[in-house]
Length: 301
Image (cartoon, rainbow, N blue to C red; front, top):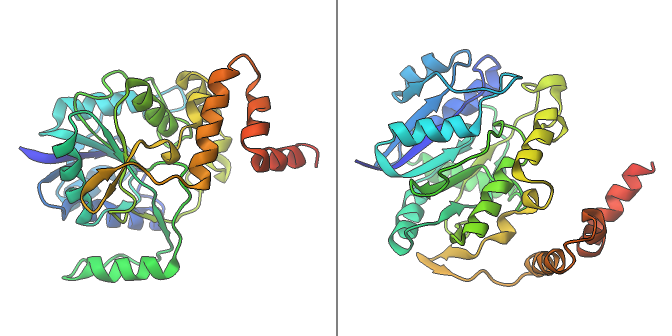
């Protein structure tokens, strides 16, 4: 039995840059000890890539009316076919290093139910990675030189025990909202939300949005609006890594340090709980004045 089953629904392998970064990412997963990888979907070139990389491929994933794979179907297929007690849904542009497995082990030893996540390091890459001996340290050094730690919003992977997330709404993969709901759900269920940013380096390979309709960001598509509806509205999709309840630091789970960002987020949650009857925008104007001013200016440009 493996420790972790990674599952993902990659994009088509038709765009040369997307194909390259997806191969980089999936290859990095296969090099981790005690894991298995399942790729889901029927996108062009996926079956061939799965065979090339020596990973499992399950083609038949349920889709919405626009042909986008559903998160609920992905979770079901992973749960039914996984050879491990830990599942990890992950975007196919994320490179993992060996420190990831240790973070999973540490979390598993200390909690029966939890979800593990982290901030990502954004990285500009134009060539396939040479996975020769020492590639991890070379990549880590290059990533740190670019110094692009993404803000604590948007999550590119979630690792959790099979006993968690049994019922998942029919979210569309690759659109906004569902990742925020994952954190919201964990908080509602009182599962520890563990931020392992201090202990791991998760590398996101930067890319454009040419694979999406009109080349627009995933925030600007109707499927995102449907994801928000399925999540239960704006209050559920405001959850971010700032809402983690624990951090993994030096192999131990500790309470996150109170930063200005975390303090403002705590105040926001208290205000939303007390003034639940007020419109969302009114609470946001108080809790997130800078963001509200930007939206206001944009609205009346």
